[in-house]
View 1 (cartoon, rainbow, N blue to C red):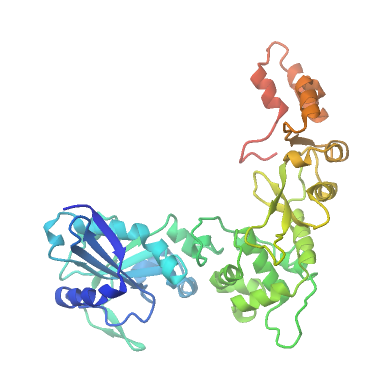
View 2: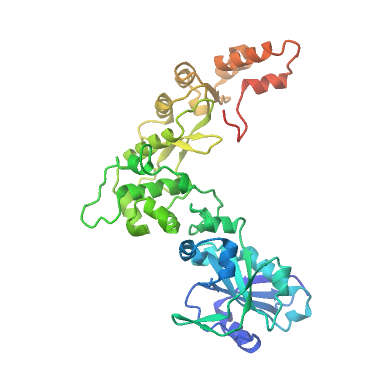
Length: 466
């Protein structure tokens, strides 16, 4: 036998696939795939012979063993059941039965790609797989060998229309996490990016339970300052509620109207109510898009920036980066694209400011204005060569009592030559004082050049907070 190749079922292969299932599987082919489903074919890479077939569909509405293993409640299960899939059919064909351990190998191959395939064809990832094994016929050995988890037996009921009828045929339940921390993700009060449509990146998430929404310093109260540009007739959602969800989703890294809408829809019911959505109903993509297109973006950015600053009132000892980028995929008819200047905390990953650079100016005066506004105190600001300017350095050192780390390139020959001739003592005063203090405490110890280099740029390691 050659290697194993697993691929999604092609339309021209459906008749052959159904024929094999009807003839060889004791349940026959799945009669209807009205919902979302995927079928896989596993073949021998050398001969092209079909060795195994698999069918995946929606997760079961009620599965006490699975629900207990995940740890979610009824509300979360109803909201996130679509992220669970069921292995509804698994058939090893006669040609495949000649090979040992084929079933467990096939399961491993399928579960490695299942979540990404589901996102590609159905718009969202899946996080947990489940299956039911008829204990009168099988022992579930291949699932155990592929590290699936046995979570118990069913109660012996089947759904018929809107009723559950007892048939007495209990089946063993196996579950498998398709992504790392699948159970934690499904039970979280925040919305992880694995739940957002068409996103394959694995980001963090915001703990909404700890987020101040109302009262002094609350996000909703802050966003109430933004002027509502919508007509009053037909308004169903508070502007502050939509904007608050937008802020949280963007802080998670979401960058589309659809993503924002799905972020809101995947929040638990009680959390949606905390955001101010009446009866817990979240806005759809169209509502989010129309609402955000009617607000004053500059005012929204200003209010959001101020709120973020209140959440981290002191920048003492923090390390900030100032940099500008031209936005991708955002060119207008004349060929130009918006240029954005951002101020980001190195270790926390928080954007303190994002400002559009006007067409008739550049990053330098915008950066200087932002530095004037930031509450810096013995901070370190990193900038690229464009911002290696006397006035920028003066603001940081003289007005803000902070230090800078700037880049000097070869096109600034005179400045570069002067820097190369400078002794350590000529650098930023606060760093110089730090060096002197350190040297006094080491009267009997000769500092090496590597020690002095470390003291000259005292940037803290990730995770340390002053």
